[in-house]
Image 1: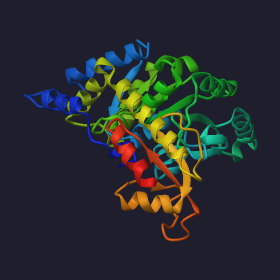
Image 2: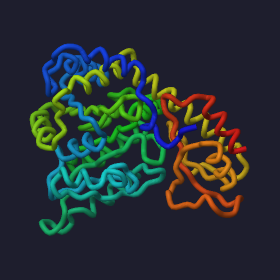
Image 3: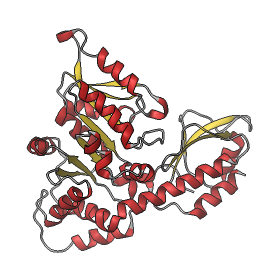
Amino acid sequence: MFFASDNTSPVHPKVMEALTAANTGYVSSYGSDPIMETVRQKIRTLFEAPEAAVYLVATGSAANALGLALITDPWQSVFCHRSSHIEEDECGAPEFYIGGGKLCLVEGKDAKMSPEALRNAIEFTGRGGVHNLQRGVVSITNVTEKGAVYSAAEVAELTAIARDYDLPCHMDGARFANAIVASGATPAEMTWKAGIDILSFGGTKNGLMGVEAVVIFDPKLAWEFELRRKRGGHLFSKHRYLSAQMDAYLTDDLWRDLATHANAMGQLLSAGIQKIEGATLLHPTDANMVFAGFPRGAHQKAFAAGANYYFWPFNQNLEGPADETLTARLVASWSTTEQDIEAFLNALN
């Protein structure tokens, strides 16, 4: 009954097997390993982008911050949702790597930027010429931090606004696989075909030990990214262990299978919670994250039975009237089972 986060789940056995297989003999370092070339070609094929530059880093924060720094000047803004991951959970890493840029926070339901709010934010920025921060980049988080999924059409609508002002676009895809499964779009349709220039293609939350791909659809930016990755301390010497994970992820659509299971478990969990008396959903369960409110008494029973999840927001107290509603976030993963969910729902009831 562990629903704290999908990045708390174990590494998938096929990934561990790939790491063991890679752990033999001597292999060139710093990304020149032969497995990396295989990964590069697989990602290019998956995204229908034969010229895309592909790099691996160990964390989502590194992928996002380095990717944004590549297309943002220090005097520019990054337009993102107020509840985006780069705003709430990266300790200023994007601003640090950009070298002084600023996040410009945009509103929208379920942590999805609304087109109107985005256009208004862009119009408002730079109005004072040299005295103001200038317009920079649009960054879209998919799946959002509230569990909602942008369709490819919704992404294209936002990037079209960005193009009206000649702004590049970045996608934070820590849960990109979950978004693809939920939306039915292809990776190409969700990214470059919809106007995305740089993608953080997540793996850690979906069964990998620790690796994210940065997919740069304009290869002219490749060399600068390599320099920024090295200068930022994110170029792995024993790179083959990153490559091996991503290679396993891309083999036989493992990435899609794991996300499909996680999303299905999220739907099952969401449906079960809604049957609890007094329960409500705070946001739609589009993928594998459930945001719900239900009585404190049910929370008390769940925690007593060993359930693990977060109150959302955190500053809520388990002590108090049993019928008072407390809100929570619960996340299913590739390793969540129907038995986990059944046990959790039985505890709630």
